[in-house]
Length: 129
Image (cartoon, rainbow, N blue to C red; front, side, top):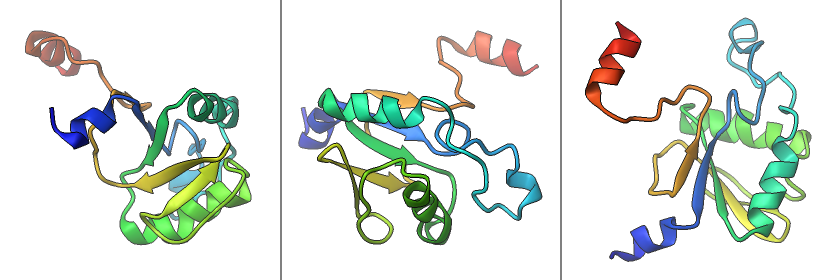
């Protein structure tokens, strides 16, 4: 088992748009983060970090959008108790360190509003046909 895989056993990747940030206004505001925090997101992240999970927030947004939109929105909306630095650096919550990224990393769980749990290809093709 590699070190990267071993560390992923307690890592949870949480999607930003649609899971933390209610983005129903996204298309009408030039892609800017203008929606509210989704109910329960702050508390869930706090519980997860307190339970020993490494929480990583992921987004399909590009690096610049993470720096100019996502991280400032997280700070302004007090999703975390503290804020440090630029893209790829750490955001602090409950004394634990959290990151924002647009890269898929090894993790035990992915929480995403547009995800489908894969079971087999027949089910996938039936779903999208």
